[in-house]
Every structure is written in structure tokens, then in C-alpha cells.
Image (cartoon, rainbow, N blue to C red; front, side, top):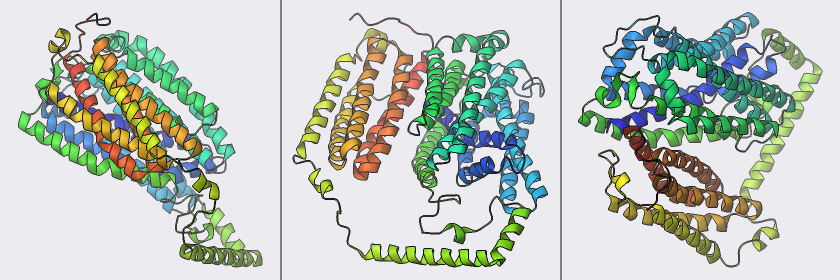
Length: 570
């Protein structure tokens, strides 16, 4: 049970690193954007991209703190009584950052905007640095089990400095990548080139610092170095590949997959650190099981975490989707309600001089004519919209009807055949009665062997039904892309059994199931755009795969020294 709670805790750490890290990185680019005139457009893109989501991302920080002090109270006490200086600085940075960001958008005077903007930007660098320094102190064993360690050397040391610098660089790379994609969505080629160059520079510097950090860890944290170059090495390699793929997609002006590749690279780095740290929470002297609360408390934490995930994750996904479509927030893209730029007119991002010039233009004849034309355009648009609402929804393009499949059972049959082949391939590779598997140290919350077949049978059936329904609803290139997404997902599904059982490697199985989870997210998003009922049908399948990931991670944590190597002979 303790390992499961640790997995839930680390899920929150990864989510905050990816989502909150992008927000902190935006503050770094705000800081070096230049003067008021030169940095106005880059800062405006940061404002309109960050405003709808920056507060929601801190949900993961609260989640991590609650799970840590409830599930591992002794570790929480040791951390807070030793690393209280960077913790206080990080929390102070979060408060000043939020206040600076909010007040900068509400003030009129240029001097005040500069003051609040500086607070926002500097705090955005201070906070991730402190979090990275805390991670370095924990990994290097400078936090004693009883707490009350050295308040200075615990976070001012080579490992902590390396962690802080890497945290700032990784956040900067994430933010620049996200802002590059946002500029492409807005068809702003100038800002695309601006942030693309900075994303590639941040990625290159992050890679160089990571390579140099190898020698720092070898001298200051030898166990962490050994684990990163051993069990966690596949994750580190995948992180480097993800970073290179993200940079290549940026250069190719691709929006699909760019943010996923960048976020995946950072997430794999954090996961690699977690695997290297396992099975300890503090250095090499306090293990996860030793720091855990009683099992009754841990069971409550698991239940609350699951319920919180079911409530919070869909809300955050909806917020990000609405923000990406321009439905929430104020920016160059209008609200869905038909509000025009002239009606929005809040003066966001304008200095005192800009507003004075705007008011003078409004008092001129040209300003009046512009308002009259804008009002007429808005009125005409609303009238047309009202007429279109009363018009019956009929297909205007006859090819849409003609392209419908004549035999709707064919996609269902194809999906059923593909799912059956996947199930057979996975079953042939799975050998739960093998001696090496029986000797593994498995968690007490692992289901009995018979339960897997009972669960996977209806799940495979749901995948076949959802696939047939979605392929029937899709058309043209979208159908081909959807079929490819299903094929890749089923290949990863069948590949896990081979990685885990045939290679006798729980770590390789963990890498495979993480890739399967990422594929599930992409598949759900693509299917939801075509048929939401089909996407809802796939939710139990994705949830069970996530549970299998937690189970696999627990097995890796309990068996961190591999018992067997090489492919199975029998």
C-alpha cells in the first residue's frame, strides 16, 4: 500500500512539473523580453495564454503536500524542519508571482506595470529553482531522518544547485515550446520565430547542463548517479529522444505532438529521478515503507486520491480545451458568444500613454466612424447568427452523405479482428506461472491471476465497439488517422506482455505501459473529436491501463535489483 501511495504522490509531482513548470517558464521569458516597446508582443502572448490556467495548475502542488504529510508524516516532518528556507522562499515566490501577474494586468501607469511585472518574472525563476534545490537535497541524502538538519548546506550544495538550474531551464523549454505552438495557432509568424528560437536554445542549454551534471552527481551523489546510469537509464534516453523530437517538430512548424513531446521529455526526466530514488524517500536512510503511515490511513489516502482524480482531472482537461479554443480568457481570439474586439476593449496590456492615445482617437471623427462601422458589423453578424440558429441543420454538401460507409459492420469486424489478435498475442507471451515471476515481490493490492482475464475480456470488447463506432463516424483522412491511432495503441498493448514476461524485465514493462498510457490519451482525444460516446466507452480501458501502470511501478520499486536478465528460454 505504501508503494501505491508513493506512486500517487509522484503522479502529482510529474503533473506539477509539466503544467506548473510551463507557467514558471513563461515568467522567465517575460523577464528577458526587453523593454516596454520591444517586449510588448511577447508579453501579451504570455498574458493571454497564461491568464485562464495559471491558478489551476497549482492544484497539483496542494495535492502533493496533502498526500506527503498524510501518507508519509515522518518524511514530511524531516523535510519541513530541514529545508524550511527554500520551502518558504518557494511559497513566497508563488504568492508574489500571482500578485504581480494579477496587478500588472489591472494597473494603468507604466511604472506600476514594470514593478509588478518584475515581481512576476523574478518570482517565476525563484520558485522552480527552490523546488529543484529541494529535490537535490533529498536525493543527495542531506535531510536526516529525524529532521532538523543543516538549514544551509541541505539546499546549498552541488546537487541542489544542479537541480535548481535544471528546473529553471526545463521550465523555460516547456514554456517556449507551448508559446511557439500558441503563436502558430494564432498565425503570428513573427512570434512563432521568436519563441521557436528560444525554445531550441533552451533545449540545447538544458541538454548541455544535463551532460555536465553527470560529473556533478558522480562526485556529490554517487548512489543517484549509479541508479540513473542503471535502472533509470532507459527513461533518461527516452527523455533525450523526446526532447530532440520536440525540437524537430518545432523546426518543422508542427503543432500536433509538439507539446506532447516536450512535456513527455520533462516528465520522463522527473520519472527517471523517481526511479533512481526508489525505494528511498530521503537519501539512502529512510525508505518508503519506513516513512509510511498506518495501512488504514494509506487506504483512505488512496480512496481520496482516486476520487479527487475523477473530479479534478476532467475539469482541468475541460479548462485547457476551452482555453485552447479561445472560449475562456481574453486575447486576440474572441469569445464564443460573438463578442468583438471593440466590445472587449478592456485596455489589457496597454500602458498609460497607449490609453491616452486611444482615447484621443476615440474623440476624433475617425474614431466615431470606426465605432459606427464596428457597431454595424456586430449588429449584422448577430442578425446573421440569429437567422442561422433558426435554420434547420441539413447537410449542404451531398458528398458528405455519399461518403458514408455502405456496410457499417465492416469497421466493427475489422476492430474485433484486431483486438482478438492483440489478446491472443498478449496471452501467448504472458506466463504468470513462471518461476521468476512467482519469485517477484509483488504488492498486496495486486489482483489474483484469474481477475486479469475476467477484466480484460470486457475491456477488449469495449475497445472493439468503440473502434467500430468511431471509424463509422469518421470521414476521409480523419478515418485513416484514427485507424492508425488504434493500430498503434493495440501494438503497444500487445508489446507490454513481451517486454514484461518474455524479456523478464519489469522496468521495460513499465516503459511500455507508460507509452501505452500516452497512446490512450491521444486516442481518447482523437476519438472524442469524432464520437464522444465512443470515447466514453474507452474510459474504463484507459483507467485499467493506468492502474496497471501503478502496479508495474510498484513491482519495479519492490524489485529494484533485477533477478534475471535476457529473454525467456521456456
